[in-house]
Image (cartoon, rainbow, N blue to C red; front, side, top):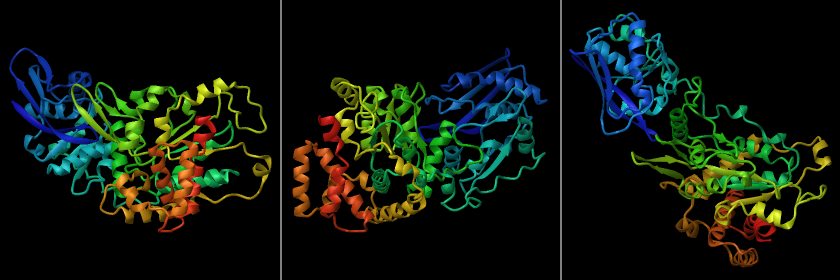
Length: 513
């Protein structure tokens, strides 16, 4: 007998419908799975067999064939365990076949019949709604994230026997309450972030960080060890605007696909902060694998990617970031498929000025030779540096600043100014795909970044003295536009351009000399 169970699989950051067709026929006992399954799916026959028997159901000694349609797309993961098991039981009349209409089933089975969580619950729920599916049966741990999707009944189950009883109308399971109706406002989680008020001194660095957050600009901090670079970087999400609902859903989808979304956090409401170790591979940073998966640049989407000790990263790893930094997405091509993941992140990097770290420290002697310093900083290519809008030196903190009782502004105060500047940008770019000044292309720069003649003269001198590229020229204009937005000034004045030029001083201080 043949039974068909609706299921789903993830491709990129979206999901598609998979029909699990199970045929139980006479013949020598055998269990085969077709439809381009990976190793995890091929092994499901052992998990399904054990789970059905250990749950007290009858497993037929027949020839069983499970087909995953469409059969021309490679499928991965263990989420097909439950639909295959339900298909076997429906084909042997242990589950009511009519109850599977308009019902999607997913879940990984343990050998005792319990159901374990899966990856991609949110995109799967979205695909179910878009395809007119009314009911979704999936592990209880994934129910909250799937319940974000309205007009879809999400039924959490914890075991194969519970799922079978529900489909046979022998047990009632209440659908998961809609998550969005019980989620607090968009400020949720803001109080739990690290606060900028903890940072002593470094006022000019805090200002640079504020400008960076207001316009979504990439930032690099350079200074001796212990000057507070990492401490400041970790607090950048606390001054960034809170995620909009669209950004939150997109961020949640990515974390759900990778499997790092906590079961008690159905919707990500704070901007992600990722800080990979410098030994990461290019595939780990960009994404990849036999079955492509998102990398750190995609996990940082709508948030911050922090690269500490930037020169310690391998050159090829840093160079592969150039394309996503420009385009806001990354495309991974393999023989089986070509997938595009979003990667619109704010790059924040930190580094020492030399191998020993004390080249710019007035209180410590640098023991590095000129050649060692040159070799160290040359690990960062000019094209990559051109894509970093703001460069700021972070000197060692003086004792007077460390011991002072006076504290700086809290993150909440800075965030208000940042959000006001972002609101100006949202109105400016309304109706376009651009969300911040850092994303402006040449056309928008010409339209929104006109500067007066005195500022033009200042910029001309700076370009000639620093030897900046055309890309760096555009980035100075973008940063100037953001500084003017923070001042709520519709015009870019000389003082705004002057401050933006100061954020390119490292071109002269380190890379040029």
